[in-house]
Image (cartoon, rainbow, N blue to C red; front, side, top):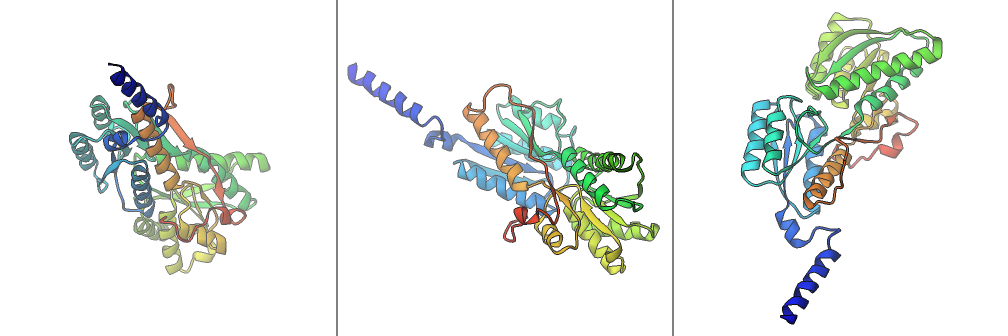
Length: 326
């Protein structure tokens, strides 16, 4: 009896000692599912790669899926992961409302659901959403653009990702609000034109095609504003082919893709907002595993934002990593 009691006490003491980290049994029970709605842009590929590495670093097994920009496939992907026993779901949703039932069903099955990057409707039952602050990044980029173009008319070609995507909406609204507020500070007036909007599906090829169409319709474009770097890099190719590259300022509301940062460093690209896919992914996985272990704490916010920043020639060296995945 005494020997059994001492053994139990010793076991409890050891369990307490390792409660701050994943014990082997906990690690074996941690099964992370990563549901990406697309991998069509380098940002998303880098995000998935970082999420997988972080989950494995924490001792979890990992299952990943690419919905190929198909909402119904993503719903099926999530259902399949849940049926196979995941207990943490990292979800980058194709549609904010369309993924509500899948997120709710996963939560009802005991899965810890963390939304990441693209917005999931807050009415869904999930723990939190990890994002860069699209509105704050956008505002900083808008302020930068207004300062850069002070006294010059702005004829803006807007490159958007996908219709209905709330992250894209927040980004463009943030930039336009930042322009307006900075212009008011500078001159007490607001004056800029968005001459056209193109949809580039977040990809370089889409940005190039959208820019080709916009250049045909609008000869006076002098600013390209994209909701991510990939589309702006595509637009740059279209401008180069049209012989217009030296007449247009390139800016993105978000990302910090290494190719864009190299161009910022070299003076061929204006500015972009900081949206580090690895930081977002690592944070999402860390929160999910803490929730599984019961160490996340009460009253965790349903929206969690990384620190915003605008990246230009003055600070690009702080962020540019030539060997980065993205």
